[in-house]
Length: 86
Ligand code: SF4
Image 1: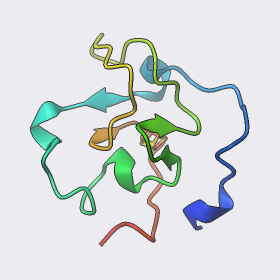
Image 2 (image 1 turned 60 degrees about the vertical axis):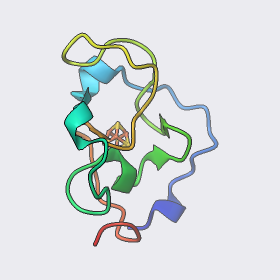
Image 3 (image 1 turned 30 degrees about the horizontal axis):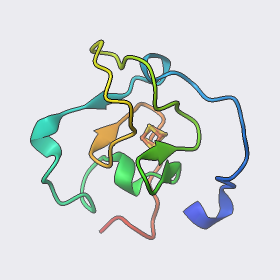
């Protein structure tokens, strides 16, 4: 499945970060985001720190509020975008 098939301009109800299991670990910020499990190479990721199915606002599973979906973030709904992963 390609990320190009997921409509990202629609206003669907989104899950909260806490419900999705979203976390951000600052130690991964400088990682090679084309390898491993990161929002950056998820089919739902939207360039500009957003996600098609998880809201940017509110606390994550650790109670942290970054206000963004970070490229180095991750949640339990991650599905690889084969056009980005190495
Ligand atoms: S891993 Fe989760 S929060 Fe990150 S882009 Fe994919 S669905 Fe959105």
